[in-house]
Length: 160
Image 1: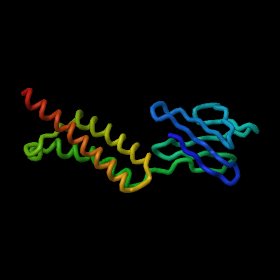
Image 2: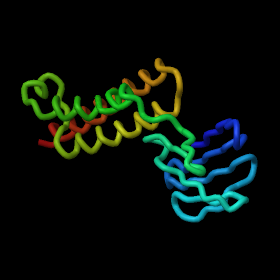
Image 3: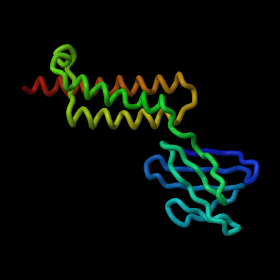
Image 4: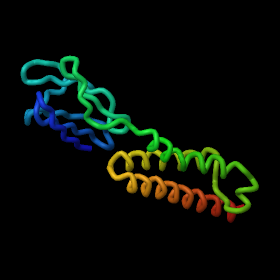
């Protein structure tokens, strides 16, 4: 994910983090910073800057004691919305009376699937700005999780 920040002292700060690898790169004022370690970069004047955090939890750039927010922190409602698939599957999939109504696979299989879609939902919500789109992504993640867990439960019941 690429983020561009305009700073009054340092000018344009470009932060890029690989979605799959987590590799980070920073450029300040159009100049790419030299990577010293996973979190530390060196400016052209020799100043060491540190990147704390990441895309999902919020990234900050520390230059000479000044913290500059590169990506926003996770909001409380994003966390609440992203755990909905996990909570739904864990509760519904482990209550026999509810599974008689709509069978859903729970346990480790349901937990793994719902955990994956919870993280994907959080990543999707962090990628967009409008709240209505965040809600759409959250409920889409919930619907896909339920559909997959329902399909697996039907397949297991058919095999028995």
